[in-house]
Amino acid sequence: MPYANENIFAKIIRGDIPSYRVFEDEQTLAFMDVMPQVPGHTLVIPKFPAENLLDVDPDYLAATILVTQRVAGAVKEAFEAPGIMIAQLNGSAAGQTVFHLHFHILPRHDGLEFKLHARDMEDGAVLEAHAQRIRAALDSR
Image (cartoon, rainbow, N blue to C red; front, side, top):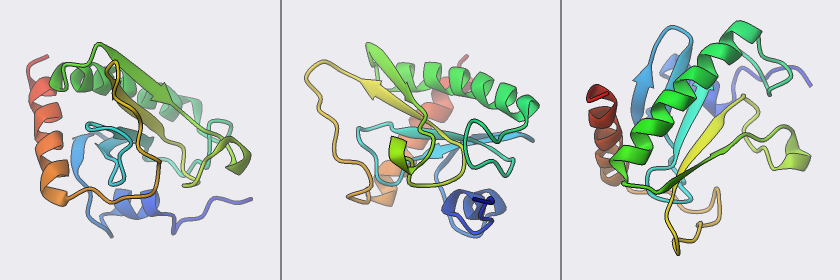
């Protein structure tokens, strides 16, 4: 299937729809998941039109994973999480619902269960507050 330039993440990259941005550089973008499974659920994407891990230019993949590592450390700090889960899904059979390569960063705490994904929109004020916490943690690194 060819890359769909109208997917939601492509629209976020272009600024066609708003997002709660955490980090951005020439090759990558990190922002809050608007339907988080846990507080602090953050996404990192390449600014390259790749549907999944198998389609991405290796230079963009390298940049994206480095940003994922950096942002994951900030999420861990900002949410005082003893663990961090990184998830990356490829294809609908694997659970991918947005067909633009992305990495999920989820802070993990014992006893805190996941919400179902893609079910409930979080309040924008909460997402902005979470983004601010992560940006502050990035700035302190």
